[in-house]
Amino acid sequence: MLMEQRFYEILRAIEEKQTVTVQELTELLNTSESTIRRDLSILDKEGKLNKVHGGATAIGHYTTKDEDVALRMTQNREEKLEIVRYAATLILPEDFVYLDAGTTTELMIDYITEKNAIYVTNGISHAKRLVQKGCEAHILGGKIKLSTEAVVGNETISELDKYNFTLGFFGTNGISVKRGFSTPDIDEAMVKKKAMEQCKQSYVLADSTKFNQISAIRFADFKAADIITSKIKSKEFDGYDNVREVAK
Image (cartoon, rainbow, N blue to C red; front, side, top):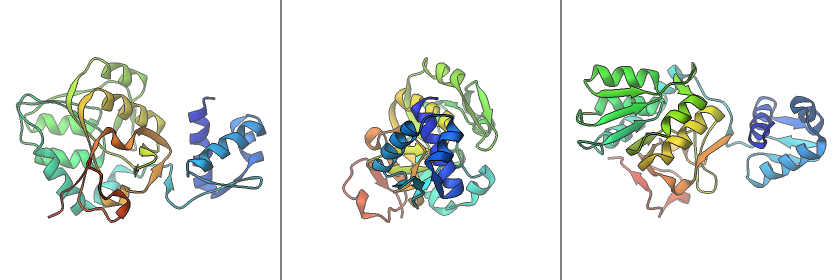
């Protein structure tokens, strides 16, 4: 099992149980105690768990699960609307746009008016709604993840390799200055990572609850994209030139 996969399974087990022993993890992952202890030391140093004698415990700001799309659509809706209204104005004629799957990026479609741009997405509902608006839209191929209605997997990543996007708009589960942008699912994270690499300019759309959160898989460094948000509550992000607050 790859190290990233072990990390993901360790963090998922901790979130479910809040505390796990080294013995439990060795049986779960079918690996040695020395490997588990080393993994726990790395994750503790990165601030993703608390290493204790004989195992590890959870910390409050770490998540390893995605909530269902229907639930996420209703969360922090007013904040998200401020964010997506602004984000939609950044699209210009002739732009080649990547639109990441997710509830915030889907809300953005309501405010997209530029029909002389071309759109590519891994969001199932995103593609349908773009076409219904009269936009030229393409959907990536791959495996469908039902909980987030995203297309993911190796086929999706390979297909992204041929594209050179002028703009990309992304969702995230967590934003941390030290740990960057992160999401719970490794398949979605790898698609986000590749898509962002193919963009000339990347934007992460995030409400205030995403700041100082860390999720299981990092898909980009903090400075890899401009962040569009409403109003940040944490002073830790003051002074960063890649953060745009758009609250009225």
